[in-house]
Image (tube, rainbow, N blue to C red; front, side, top):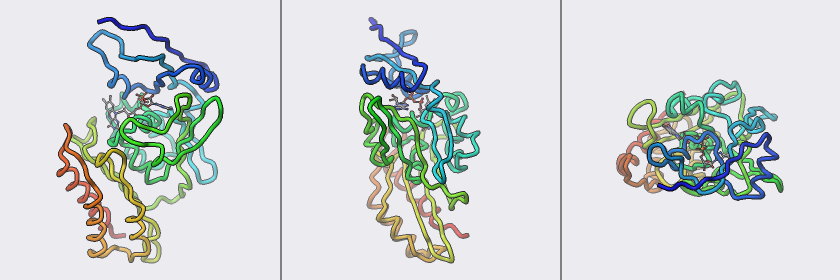
Length: 286
Ligand SMILES: Cc1cc2nc3c(=O)[nH]c(=O)nc-3n(C[C@H](O)[C@H](O)[C@H](O)COP(=O)(O)OP(=O)(O)OC[C@H]3O[C@@H](n4cnc5c(N)ncnc54)[C@H](O)[C@@H]3O)c2cc1C
């Protein structure tokens, strides 16, 4: 097998990295835990990369976690292990990260990589949708931010220009006291397994009425599924929810969710489990 030599860059700073991206179309590599699987060659041969690669995992500008007022900023190259140890990361996200792969992958894999790989089975994604996460991007020309639901467009498809990289993920207006949160991942086993179906929900109530409700499903379509119009039907309902309201919400998602059969599961299994997880979440008592 003939392999073509490619250039690789490991710049000292974010500015130098962005300058390189403005000159040449390059493949960004953060932890490499998705890419090295996707681009793997037969044993002993280098990965199948067809353009210059730029390593970004070491850039300290992409590894900060900090709070500005109520917003939590997470550097795109923070690894799962780093985030799980940081006091600003919400506990529910830590719970989801604990269920990702095994420690070796958690020491390499990054939140930016999980987002930019844009797999509907990505385990941080349902919660990032629930948090209404914003994706901050930079190029040598400037900066912009996008809502996660607009940034992720389909499996391995994100709204990123060739000269841009994701610098931060912002969780806006995270309250000190978290609402009722659930994250459930269903896979072949408890650890080191890829998701067949995932569900994240959050609900806040006060004086017997629902104030806010958010519901997100992973691995039931090309992107994470959230439906603002269905969530809105929960707002103002008496808490705990009665069976009629719960049946109505489950029925709405029954028509909306259209999971497919693939090598990990069947559409019927995914839909059944997704609706069971939703019902269980909605049946919460204080
Ligand atoms: C054994 C194994 C088990 C796994 N288990 C799980 C699991 O349980 N749950 C789960 O969700 N995932 C799992 N994964 C997938 C993977 O570990 C995660 O998706 C991880 O977060 C990817 O991050 P990374 O830094 O390694 O991404 P990389 O492989 O470096 O990059 C992935 C993609 O994102 C792009 N990218 C990365 N960072 C940026 C950035 N800052 N700006 C723009 N583009 C960027 C890259 O160019 C590439 O296209 C597993 C992988 C392996 C190998």
